Image 1 (cartoon, one colour):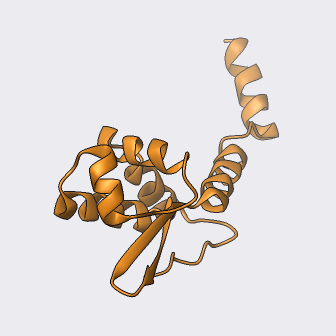
Image 2 (cartoon, rainbow, N blue to C red):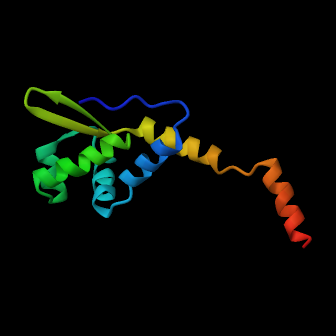
Length: 114
């Protein structure tokens, strides 16, 4: 039930999964709510964001797969929290992925002369 291990250099497939997890207004609302609490049960979160528990569980599964949230079980209750480390790691890697490279700059210079 815990979060997936975060790789140091996510593959493009992992990037896709991460950003697909964030590609829903409903999931963004869940993330926004989780940003304001240390952790919360699924039932409490369902009430807070006004979504049925089965639908919320589906969205939370997507967020777990994208390494956006963490889950842990205490008895029958499942607690969720925002995976800030995971979000920061993907952000850093994306920044590296899209950073200008010397060869690209050289090509841009050549194209501007055309």
